Length: 373
Image 1: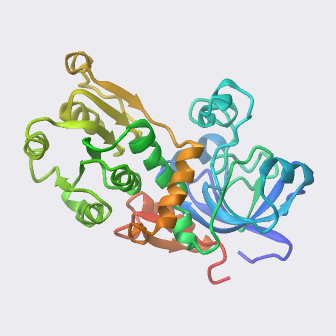
Image 2: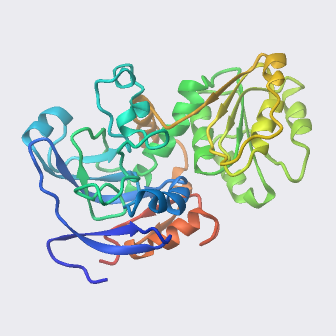
Image 3: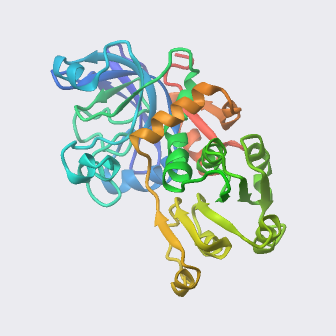
């Protein structure tokens, strides 16, 4: 694929589960819109199932929503509304909320119908087909269209781009462990799944002052479990080597967990184990999509243990701002989360790496659209 002058090069996910490099026209910038020159985009774990399913059901699209870059062009009305100017270094949220519905007015704009792609046909960055003009809705490109409803976070100039792409995944961790989970002094937090989201929850729980943080995974996740300890976990458990229930009971003196955060995906077993290891009156947060029904779920267990079970989606504005502060503090070795960087020509390899079908030992990957240009 040749690079054309005065065009925007992007990696497009096609209906046949392949990536094609495409040159797009630069979008027209109106008074209410803008254009971002992308510096780097993180690869969210959700991009793998999006790649497998969304192009087939919605049409070809540019994936990627953990975008960091510089405001390249901006309309006059957008300048007044957004509070950013040309040249500012920013991270984008994936959401494009309307700003006036009940969800937006109460701070839950991630649930706004206009940007909900899970329970509706909303529009957001990284999961909108190129058939919707002006096509440049995703971060796996050199430039990205800035919709009038874009949500921005300013990024310090000195922050490395790879770390800046952690703003959203770490924001999820802050939202789940801290804001919703209320992890803190005296609380025992169990985090199931040592992927990028589970490790983000580990950082957030430690930052909040949780007294016990236990991260669970498989023997094959040993490198991630080791990193979990570096990021603040007090204990790690390989659940295919020891009995989970007995281990949690032993660590907690039989009290079990105040908060269980299930960040794993692709199976129902962790939902059942989360309910088992939560103490009476505890909180279970379900943060990873399973894709299958939970067949042996017994609702009476919630009644008997007086449990609160809550599904989690995404992050609030506050959580992302807190995440950026954590990154800026340099208190945690977050660079160890950033394991792979891919060129635009390598986006398909990057996606397959996310899905466990590419390069080994991946945690958080990035796309640098200017690499080797």
